[in-house]
Each structure stands twice: as structure tokens, then as C-alpha cells.
Length: 298
Ligand code: ADP
Image (cartoon, rainbow, N blue to C red):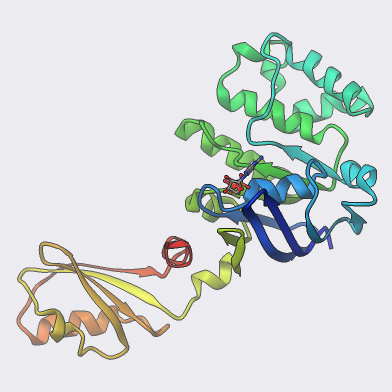
């Protein structure tokens, strides 16, 4: 097991940031740690990287105890904090050499991490001259210097523009071929784009632990349909397996069915039988977004 967390709790004064959180991550997984702001994501990441101590519970990285084996834990883990301190006046290579010294690791891997993070063309520049996306690559390169098995990335795409965001996600996915990754985010699309599995945390409590593939096959589907005329919702509610009907504007309806059977033809036949025209019809899976909203609603 690359990461194992058992009943971790942590308070800041009266503020309970984590309330008995447990999970385990296997070698090679890329797991999203998803939750609204203030949910406890950074707190958990700081505990796993030994920057902070839990009040209660146990956590292990590569079977090393974060409390009693912090040096081994640090060797096993690469950390990209949310506000990564970069020295803007330093050249990329100089910064990596500086970090290698600070973290007492060999400088021999600098060319490798520059290559791994696609920094080749920018490596001779000052960090301040790089775009935010490339600055984030420098942070990643630094986290990879000691070739850790596990990477902990705290909100790695915050502040990036859409193109940079896509590039960094691609890079993370690429790196994940060789590493175990725990990545925190409050963006659901990020999890869908890069992760195999999602842990959802809300107010310090783990509220979901799901494989993305299972989520896609959830026994619930939403059909979005547009008719050419208004339909009484009660009428649509009589369709088989209906859980919920919502008029989302104009003559557009979102119908939630509790079945894995494709219900599009049933809705189409319903329209036909009632002399309605179907202007558009599409099927959506109950997705991560609705799960997240459901589980983190206050
Ligand atoms: P997230 O990373 O999910 O946004 P955090 O782990 O940063 O959440 O915060 C969890 C809770 O703990 C929040 O209520 C936050 O205000 C509180 N908190 C975090 N760090 C500190 C701190 N150093 N002192 C006091 N409260 C803190």
C-alpha cells in the first residue's frame, strides 16, 4: 500500500479540520482528493508529508509511519504545496540545484526531471520569466528530484489558464505511469480528466470513495429532452423507473431514471404517443458533479 490513513483527526484550536478520516491508496493509483474550500484537504496533505502532526490516528507512506519515520516518509514522497515558493530571480537549473541541496539529494537527476516535466526549452530562463504553467512545471520538477514513489499535489492547476491547465493535467497523467499520485482539487472536471478514483471530503469527513469507472456505470441516468410544447410534469412522472422530473427552462425537461437500461426510446415513444415533437434528446450519466453537490451540500 502506498498510502494508508487510519482515523486521522486534527483540530486548530476549536476548529476541527479532520474528523477521523481513513483511506488507502494502492501503488500506481492516481486519486483525486476532492472537496470544497476548507474541507480539510491541505491539512491531510500536510500530515502525509510530515509538515504537520495529527492529533489522533495513524498514517503510513510506503509502510513508513509519518510520526516516527519522518525521514523515510520524506524520501518516499514528493510534495507540491498549494502556494509553492519559487524564487523568481533564480534560473530554473539553479533553483533545482538549490532544492537538491536543501533536501540533501543528488543533483544528478536534474536533467532527468527537466526532461520529465517538459522544461527543456525553458531550463536556461529565470523562473520569473516563465508563464504560470511553466512555473508549475518547475515545482513538479523539484518534487520529482529525489525520485519519490508517491506524489502529493495540492491544487496543482490553481491560477492556470485553460491551455496551461490542459498541459499540466497531461503531464500529471504522464508522470502517473510511474508514480502513485494523490491530487487535491475543488474542481470536479479535474478529477474526471486525470484520476482513476475520487475521495470526497466535506467538513473534515470522508463522504465518498469511488472508482471513476464505477461512477460512470451508476444505476442512474438523466435524460434531457426538449419537446415542442409544454408537458405536465406529473405526466412525465408516470414513465417507468422515474425518480425525478425537472423543467429546466422552456420546454426542456431533465428526467432522472433509476435504471441502467437506456430510457431514450421510452421518452421518444412517449412524445410520439402524445403527439409531441422531440426537438432534442440526450442521455447523461449521473456524474461526479451531481454526486459532489449531493454530498457536500450544506
Ligand atoms: P482545504 O485545503 O480543503 O481548503 P484546509 O485543510 O486548508 O482545507 O482547512 C480545513 C479547516 O481548517 C478550515 O476550516 C480552515 O479554516 C482550518 N485551518 C486550516 N489551517 C489552519 C491554521 N493554520 N489555523 C487555523 N485554522 C486552520
